[in-house]
Length: 120
Image 1 (cartoon, rainbow, N blue to C red):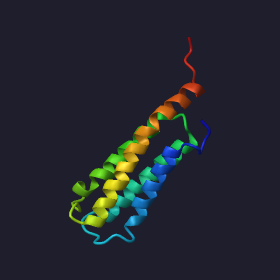
Image 2: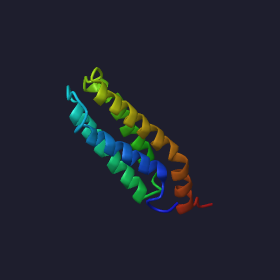
Image 3: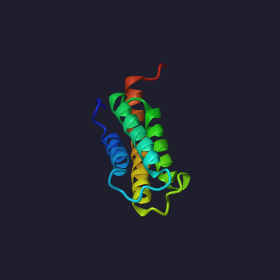
Image 4: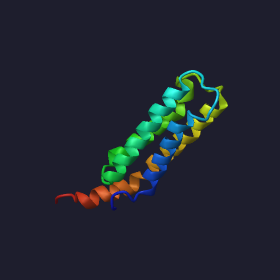
């Protein structure tokens, strides 16, 4: 697979971007909602871009899924699960990150095996 073409990684980047920027328009800003949404959103963006640049790195797909999972649980970690705007943003964007990361595993493994064939 060519660089910058895996749609799952672009979806993860978009979800991370939305989570990172949503702290601007979601209210109320209670607990650690702003900082956790920005941190995990930026980490999802970075992992997605790294995966797009190096499509054969299977580990990056797991990292995207991990950051998505952390974003998903952040309303409980940051005690903002009762703030519906930030909580739902974290749950949806985190869930999208998990699904996108796991969905990209098969294409990443195929690319990895194409780039690094097993030596017999």
